[in-house]
Image (cartoon, rainbow, N blue to C red; front, side, top):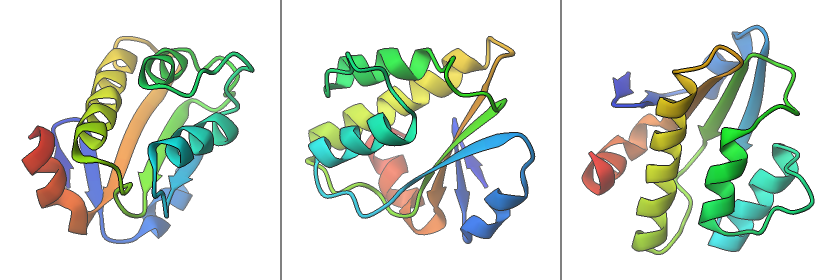
Length: 125
């Protein structure tokens, strides 16, 4: 199921059958710091990554270090962030999806668990 720029699925197994994709699983995140650190490690961000929202936005715009065509971000559950941070994070993901639609180097897809549909829609729908 798709809502705006995001997809919602019941089971992550569907994601493992996609060819030429780089899957990043985001799960059990309890703070902004954990989330940004997880991204830094899993997407191999450069050493200048500043662990803030602006730099996350910038680094998601330049994924030249990822060889696969599709970059898939899968949230097993929504990160447990302050509401204002969660809104900012979701907006960054939405902007990134839209930005990558203009280019052929990467497809950038964001998936959430179906149980989080209402919460995401409530925050940025």
